[in-house]
Image 1 (cartoon, one colour):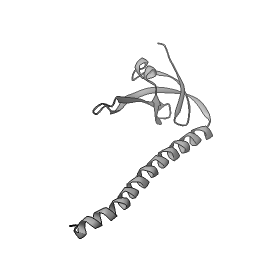
Image 2: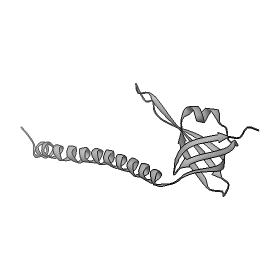
Image 3: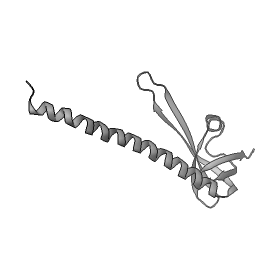
Length: 121
């Protein structure tokens, strides 16, 4: 014999599932929209080449639980001559070949690093 509670749960499941599904799709669309907005913002800014110094480096690792593999993103913070600081994502090779305190000419467009020509002392 079914209780009234069983019927309520059976009827509520599609609603709960729908809300979760819409939430996941919404987060996916928001992420894509944010990426497009950042790309457009960077492309609308001029390409600048300025003297800069690397003042900080940091990795960001996520994943790696259970059978999934870990992923690492690398970031470098540059300080410009006027004291402004810009953190930019970089590839692993750049991250490994440069150290805090390196100086050189930073070419960037918005928050996208194009190149960093290190001064050889």
